[in-house]
Image 1 (cartoon, rainbow, N blue to C red):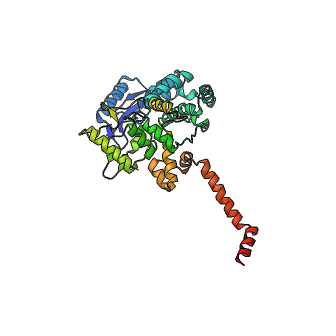
Image 2 (tube, helix red, strand yellow; image 1 turned 60 degrees about the horizontal axis):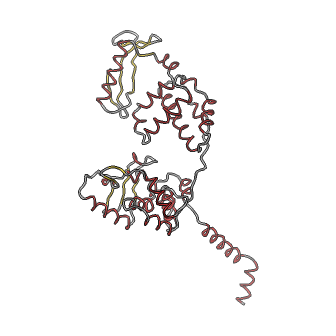
Image 3 (cartoon, rainbow, N blue to C red; image 1 turned 90 degrees about the horizontal axis):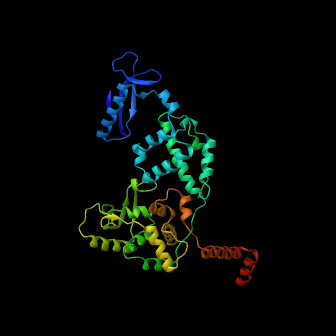
Length: 369
């Protein structure tokens, strides 16, 4: 009994008696059952603090029986528990997630609404209300957060089903196919502030996501091997990725390294006074306005990289490995085929059909005779 450690977390174990309303500490008492709580972290100090809290609640008789918890847990109370789960706190968009929970999800359904009273109709109404004047992708983000909240509630036996999973979330029609022409790229790069040019070049040459670039540290850059290493914790697909560098990008990084001088090995590659660059969205918009480049956002550089790699003859599997696409479907979404290539394909097809036609064969025979 007490504190035990497993691979995923520390656990607290006590023998308790359940009178149907509350749990009571009952070490050595006949009929007591062993009860285990998952602390949700691997930090021993935090786990000991949680153990003390649980033991105090058992001694004072303030811990509710699970049967009572199942019928009395409200959405508001569960939201607070959910936000303290270690796995949830490790999510990169944790702060934004908490804001959406506090400002959108809980206010709509009601903080005092019981978890077991959430319904499919309620989730559908939530999507409909959130969809007024908002993109499908935005609504899907809120919907997915609700799904995740209820998923963790099910893990803790607070629910028997996840009603949010029973409501379909349509795929957003937000696919882009914007690829810069060579002269557009030249204007974008040349018109950028000096501090932002290496950021643009990294996106254009590697297809790395903006957040992957801005959080890149020198310990993940191997200039000798021309590689950038992205750990699973920092990638969208949660998989390690090794990104090769072009010779020109490598030279750019060598210049940056010399400018930084001797800095701590974990220092940011792109930084101002040791802090990560901000306002990059506004910077891109200002460049585009000045250079008269229309309908462009930073993420389009990812489309540029995929398309340029494919046009250079690089095979699909290698491109997916470089940019971190987990499916061919996603690769095809980013691979843009220009109209000229389509016209050229039809021209080649027409030539082939013409050569294979009977009239063409007869003409060839006559010419041979």
